[in-house]
Amino acid sequence: MILHMCGDATAILEPMACSGFEGLSIEEKVDAKYAKRIIGDRACLIGNVSPVDILLSTPAEEVKRQAKMCIEDGVDILAPGCGLAPYTSLENLKAFVEARDEYYKGLNPEL
Image (cartoon, rainbow, N blue to C red):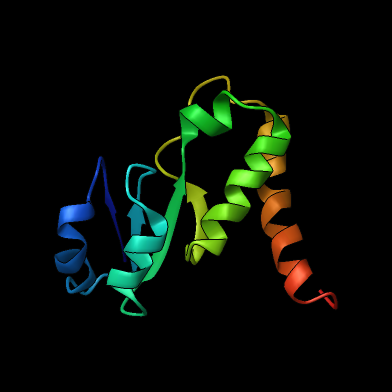
C-alpha cells in the first residue's frame, strides 16, 4: 500500500516511514534528498516533480532535468508530486517518461 501526503510533510517523515506503508508519495514541497535520508529503505520514496510548476509550465527539456534530479535525490519511483494539472502537454508527459528511461540507461547501457 502507498501513503500519499499532500503539502509539506517534512515534519512527519519519520512517522510516515514507521507507518508500515510500502510506498510514501510526497509532493514537491518536501526535499527529496532529505526525505530519502529519513525514510531510508523502510519504504519506497515516490514523487515528487511539481505537476504545475514543472510538468504544466516548463519546456520539455526542463521537465527532463527536474525529473532526473528527483531520481538523483533518492526518489525510487518517479511520479508527479500530486495529480496532473489539466492541460499538461503530452510532450511534457513524454519527456517525463523519457527522463526516467535516459537516467537508467545511462547507469546501465545494456537496457
